[in-house]
Length: 254
Image: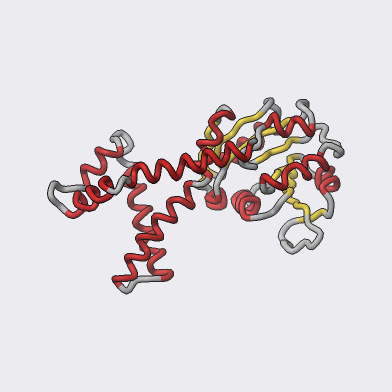
């Protein structure tokens, strides 16, 4: 199997890192060839000729010029995979044709570590789609979704790591008062999150409020903090953050 990346930024590198030990040949488009681990091609047409699956790992504003080049390439028996936010399968079909196999995905950077949650939709089922689905499952959990849900999924799971890190940044700032900072702080925060997620995973039959109640003693420190959390409407704030991201995804889709 040959995977070719158009756009080789953080997400493409994370996908490559997560799959590089699999029996896959990788390539990407680059005139500089500054990433020496895999093969490079100078043009999209050359990459498309080489690859079985073409991954469109470009920014939304850069997608149309790429699609205009792809429409002139021979895509017979090929597959296109797109993680581009806001751009539907139908949008891409408008350039390359509805007869081309297209899958839309929404992963996050945890793909590099096999811990992504990835949304998936396609316009047909072929041997290539089965292969791509198998490989995506090696990068974490895969959720098959109708495309109408992709904007909200993007806001929660695509943007989610950045939102969680923003919150952890506040924790890290307060840890500075303990004289803990830098790598040590990051390591301790990682352990905090890992422990919390292990607690959630091992008590999955319980609701989030039930799990919180197991931590918060009546009249105790956790309860005091949660009271401030709720009085400051942080639930509404975080919900608004997610809705803002979802709205932007819809705007990108135009």
